[in-house]
Amino acid sequence: GECTSVHVALASCLAHVNLVSHASRKPFGGDAIVRVVSSDEVLASVEARDGKCSIPVDPRVACKLVVEAPRHEQTSQLTNVTWTPTDFEKGVKVDIVLHNFFSQ
Image (cartoon, rainbow, N blue to C red):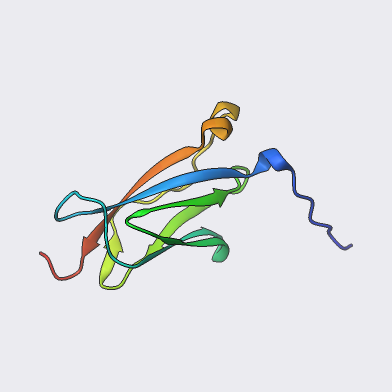
């Protein structure tokens, strides 16, 4: 049969993402897009400004945060994390380190 999508307010939680440059350990200043990906489907996409952004995450879905930044790759990501109800209230903080392809 057909499925109807129902959105429950509590199901969405803001993840506050901090992008950090691997070389300097300072906030990543370049262009970056943070996506919430679940089974190759993009659930949300937000542009980071000055290494920071907030993105809605559905904690009931196993998902990961994927960062797209020119000439950089992420060295840490979020996979299959479970959150408690108190996390919903304060939001979830995630630090992602970006590694420059050219700095070895």
